[in-house]
Length: 262
Image (cartoon, rainbow, N blue to C red; front, side, top):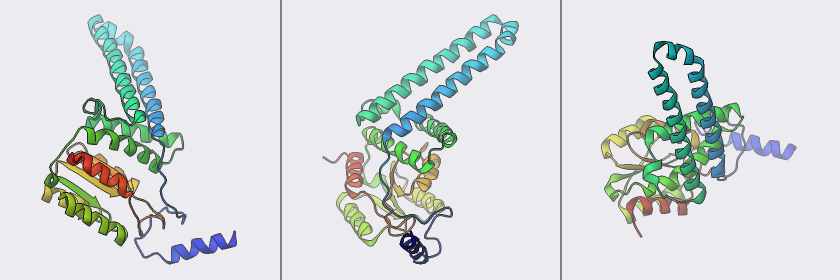
C-alpha cells in the first residue's frame, strides 16, 4: 500500500500546472474501450422514461382536453402514440446497427439533433444510475463512429483532424505522416476557442477530434448539429492531459472511411 501511495504522489509531483483534471484522483492507466451496449441500455431506459412521462401527461390533461374539444384530445392522444412508435423504432434500429457493428441505414439513424437529444437524456439518466459520464460518452462514441462514416464521405481538403496538445511526440509524428499521405487538414486545439477558430478557417464538412471524453462531449454537442464529428477518445497511460496517445489503427480506419479510400 505504501509503495502504491508513493508512486501516486511521484506521478502527481511530476506533472506541470494544467496537466491534469481538477477532479483527477491520481490514478493512471490507458483508457479501455467501454462496451457499446452500455449506452444502448441507458438510452433504452431514458426512452422508456420519456414515453411513460408523455402518456402520463396526456392522461392527466385528458378531462381538460375533452372539455375543450374531443377532436383535440384525439389528436394529442394519437400524437403521443405516434411519438412512441417512432422513437422505439429508431432506438431499435440504432441498437441493432451498433451492436452488429454495421453502418446500414446510417442515413436514417444519424440525425444530429435527435442524436444530441438522446445523448443528453442518456447522460442525465446515467448520472442518476451512478454511471460514469466518461464511460457513457466513450460507449456512445464507439457507436457513433460506426454509423457516421457510412453516411458521410468527404474530400481530403474537407476533413479536419483536431488534436489535443498532450499527445506524445510519437503520436504527433504518426498523425503528420497520415496528413501527408491523405491530404487532410490538421490542427492542435488547446481548448474550445482555438478549435472554433480553426473550424472557421478550414470550413470542413467533417471533423475527426481526438481528446478526452469530457472535451469530446462539449465539442460534440456544440459542433455536431452543424458539422458531423467523429470523436476518438485518447489513451491516457500517464493520466489525463499528459503524454496521451491514440488508437492509431482505429484512427486511420476512420479517416479512410470518411475519405472513401479503399
